[in-house]
Length: 93
Image 1 (cartoon, rainbow, N blue to C red):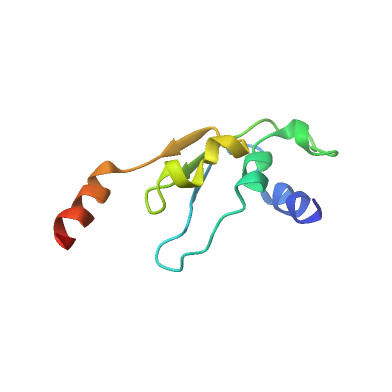
Image 2: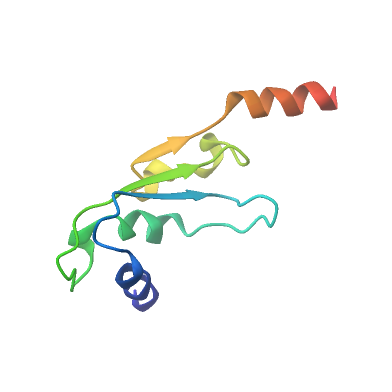
């Protein structure tokens, strides 16, 4: 929770959206989805310093939303590119 407060203090008040990709490309770093979902919620921190709720968006194209399930962890919007998936399938077949 301490790391979450540090990240939260770095988010400017006028931001309206937080965007992340999991796992990241090309490093394959896995995002802590629960912490990311909480980062957008002012109510989940003890000292919100007047911040408002921020929309959280996760791009789950690389791992597929069926496997990662970002919504389950409090993320507001999940993006998945079927075009990228079909492109990879086409080039590997």
